Image (cartoon, rainbow, N blue to C red; front, side, top):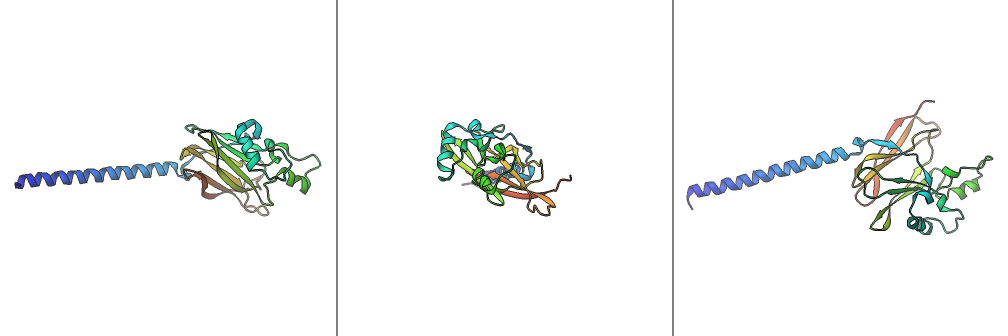
Length: 214
């Protein structure tokens, strides 16, 4: 092999290595750009307060699944009267059905108020501090539970409790829930953000907002 051939071969090796390095660099920059765009602090959120009875929002097959799998066997209430929201943001393939398994949001209490026994009957998934929320997603005709969290239930009056991101992360919007971390002497409202990791929702971050003035 002549010297000129060796130099030519080495030049091509150098060119290929340099090209690969440039491609990797741009790929890394693209990934970082996507991460920054989809980071929870970069998302914009909108308030959702369009709760309705689950029977009017949730498909019949999912309603049956909830009644069979998510309701205590000794509970005598009607899960069709749970509160629910169907979430379908731009670019989202199928709706996300968020369920608040309580009768209190829509049915409320009688004028005389709710006794402890009636509260327990109307909100079987609520404890003293927090209430359970869960969400299902339909995939290939089957419903999978992708979100299940206890959310503290104390809030300032008329405060935006639930928000949904306009952008998607792993094909689904992020969810935000607001509550009072200290309802006795509140100084701030805590907001918990949950985002999809590809197969279920996980806690993404927590931050605080100033307590609203009266």
